[in-house]
Length: 176
Image: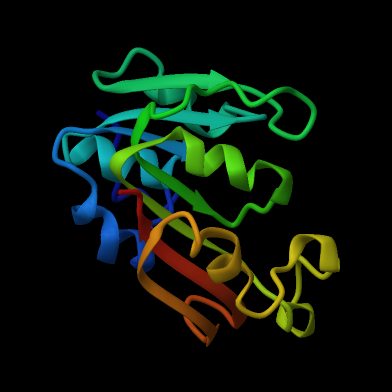
């Protein structure tokens, strides 16, 4: 297992850490747009079975063949949604936004599945990237996008200072 304390591997998001215990124990979890795998590594250490999906898997190649981890290279914005309905007990999305897949994210959650979603919101442009409004959530957008089909456990819009200034929106919601 890789050294997750390494400075190369970023620590899991506090939002994910705060809510990942809500995912059914030992469940099947999708780390969507997994990047360097910080959440895949955290979830694997918690004995979840994880599908780490991204357009570029170079940040998680060291996990290839690891127990409980499946790597899936897919361009989510150019290809069809590759996941089945009800497939996941949890879905993690951080620092990624592609609105057309919101309905598929909900459909891919199993009964009692948990969505943990966190990304940049309007106002972030004053701090840096992303600045393009297409990649910034509108006020309450995650709440509107998922609140009708999932039971919201927690939601917030915040201007963060740590680890660096950013404007983010976050939701944790469960499918019943």
